[in-house]
Length: 311
Image (cartoon, rainbow, N blue to C red):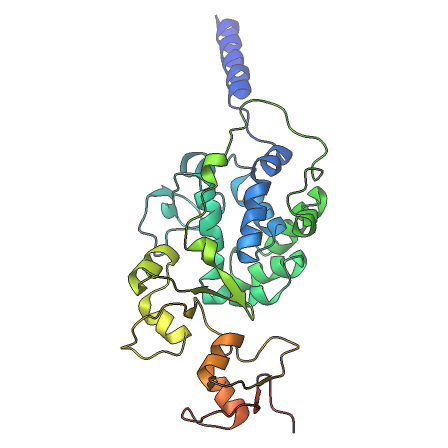
């Protein structure tokens, strides 16, 4: 009788392991690489970094958080108002975001990095500089594991994911394509949200150009940045009314312009504010660099220094 029970148990284990076969690392890459590339093209986050984080955080897509909640990046609730699920992590019963589709998780990962000021410095790095991005994510506190950056880099180099940062979604990226019909078609997940698709970058800072129908409320709802923060990031007064075709930064502008932009030659109709918005530099910093006050009127042909005035 004991032998029969053991045989039944073993048979059950074998049968369930066959039907509950999880994704391998290569299968995960094949399934989700196009999403990572699409997000890179949309936001500037390296596809290699996104995929490596997805692989590491979700256990190749096999974790309970990924299979039950479509959460591939271990993002906790924070200020989340959508569906959620409880799991033990650093503490017991922590709240994690839950998504309808895997691509919702990928989009929210991009949104999480692009709209939180502590990650803003990452966008100074090139999208093919995966090592700096990996160490930057650890520095910004994305994960508590002290080896987090090295784990990401190891995955990227073992699977040559950095090729995606340069070649994009080339068909020759993975020579050995996975087999099996259980790899679901994810085309239905690829509907990019209208706000997210409009993200642009200046001086490493993400912004959108406002369109008809945009309001502070709709921007906050879709991009998670409050009216108060938008006004602060864009040097605007509290009673400001949103305008059409306006560049609106989603996190803090920089203290100086990108390399290669030492000064700006003023053209007719420009102001210190418009120059500040064009180069993604804080208005007060431009005033300080040029030793002028907020009421200063620029003149056509004048040089406005953007990285520190030459002596």
